[in-house]
Length: 324
Image 1 (cartoon, rainbow, N blue to C red):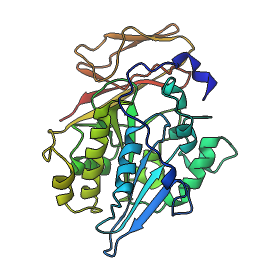
Image 2 (image 1 turned 180 degrees about the horizontal axis):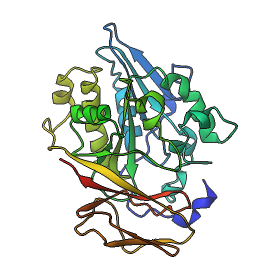
Image 3 (image 1 turned 60 degrees about the horizontal axis):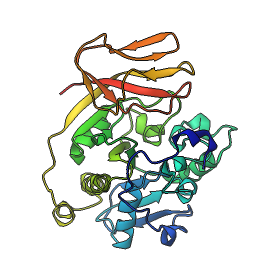
């Protein structure tokens, strides 16, 4: 557990799901612990689905465990299923579930090439460096996450058209966010060619809802199955076989217009925002940061994933607007 987060000790919401036993997959078959890879006889892309970038985000782990136990194999190409921050996951305590997000640092802020190849050292950096050679071979990535608050699921598609196109091909969840990530560090979704216009390699990050809700597992399963079909790793009939709702809700797109970054040790929102609130009027006060006041930059401003981890240099909230 990370002592820096003792102030966020007890679970803010009930735990409706149970962490799966991942010990059968610990050795992996790729040379990387907890990463399993399978190749079809028919050629196709290398598709990867990952979970547990943060050790307390359980829904993706449950879904990947289900796929592995079912002995699912790709219809074409290569499919890799991986559990990322396994050390943080092993520290999970249902009494203090927020403390197992990471051990040394947020693993989803270390995916810049200069950071991965630099002199820094942490448990998360070492793990990212283990995964990196495999990631360099991936054509399509889905990284499964969840959120602290019971906010509607989001597909974070990055800033390039290829991300939006893949999110629309997946078809779920209903909200696609066009964003550029975090100032505090690069996400795996944004790694290398995933963020290059000239490359067809594409990554998505899905936020499935509240960390420990049963619904987050449903969203993770739905998104994963649709992602496998959209990328060609699975045949379309898998949707009918595995999902109770074969027709997803219509999608809408939010474009991030501004990221609010914490500048002082005294940042405070003016209300208990949980995310996806739409503030009707431009110039509405949202937060204070020392002597600085933060206002909505435009009408119908959507608040995307406000956080209570308000350290200096961190993204407090992203602001956006519906563009469809």
